[in-house]
Figure 1 (cartoon, rainbow, N blue to C red):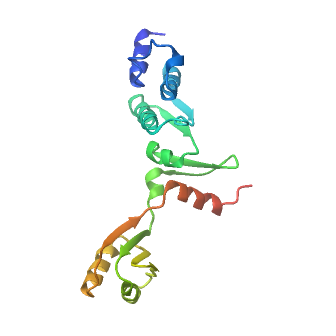
Figure 2: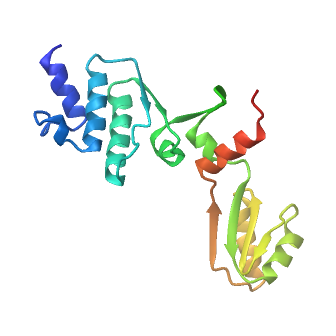
Figure 3: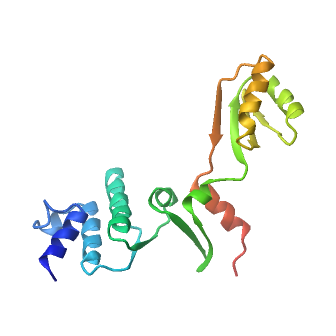
Length: 196
């Protein structure tokens, strides 16, 4: 093993200042990074990590996430991460695969998972707006909760709706897109599929 490679890997995982300390003095995050460094000594083409952020505090989780992304980019390798922490996978991965009962049931890009053909929006106005919207925009059936309307629409319809509601003299306080989390999408997919 060349010492240059050892130095390179130690630097890659950010342990330069502590590499000569006893491992028992390392925090959990440092031990995780040391484990990744050990797996990198003989550069693999594929690195498989199981729950690499398990038990880490938010700062340690962010560090490990960045190291993993750097490994994939700088070392040009495929990194496969197994985890139940879907919010972490959303921030760490380019593609997501779902295993259900030991079978791979779906693989998509994270961006593809996070985009809908028809998005859900919320507009905060007064209750009279629901009547106007359903009359003017066919297919729009807003759910009314107090002063908030929630509905599915194409992005291009939103400016038209705002103009329409403002033209009727209705005050618009907020318009926002409601995005499903990766966890919600995961549950949608796994609940709809029966795997035998």
